[in-house]
Image (tube, rainbow, N blue to C red; front, side, top):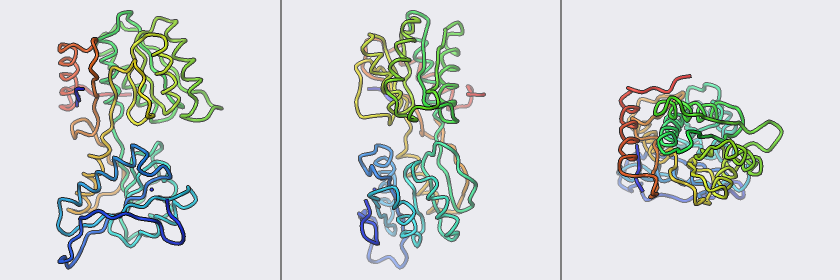
Length: 325
């Protein structure tokens, strides 16, 4: 593989502690990481907690707590329970409403929200980590255009919103950057079905694209995209998946667009400790090592193909290529 580049109970949440604190410290920087109900079974939460642990592990006077709420109704209570810490991290978009409310109620505490689907209102003591998924999708589109034999590639996305528009924009621009005449198909999950959780629709849409001669399918949007990948595998075409969609790994996958949540959270913790505090949206990009494309070991991906993708990644990082609306 080549890399191109949470249950509370009772009145107090259950927590685990990293070994970062030192008894000799006169003051200790305290960090709390609050996961969603999936806890560390969620790859996003697990990556975020690793980032926290890595950041505090390099310091003599830092300490981190991991809180695992048992149900969504405990999100606000759990965040509030750690409001006396120096930094509180909401590790999932599922905590968006809760962390905005608790940050407003505790203006002296700094909060971080990791990778929300919808950007929340501006709160001075809340930093929002977003990842340039459009850049990772650009690389996915570039790869698709390089390896397609039919000249037709396609993307299956979640609902028509900011995150999925960014993925579609990046994929389509990346494909056309490499091969201007490529035909790029795409569809958003329609309203009325379960957002990011309609694999049957995703599968049906992928099969429809294959009938239009698409031979590379980009599947994004949770289990909706996962359904598209499974249909691509059954249809015998190549596919590119989006990081953090689901645990299964269809045989068609030749690459994965990746958000390096661990690195983003590590940078956020280090920045909060070093100061001064910076709230608001912080968009992390390929130049910071926050997004990229992971290439699989596949006969389609020759050394020449890998080198072309690496070159495009370098141009994105340098700002020589931009993904624009």
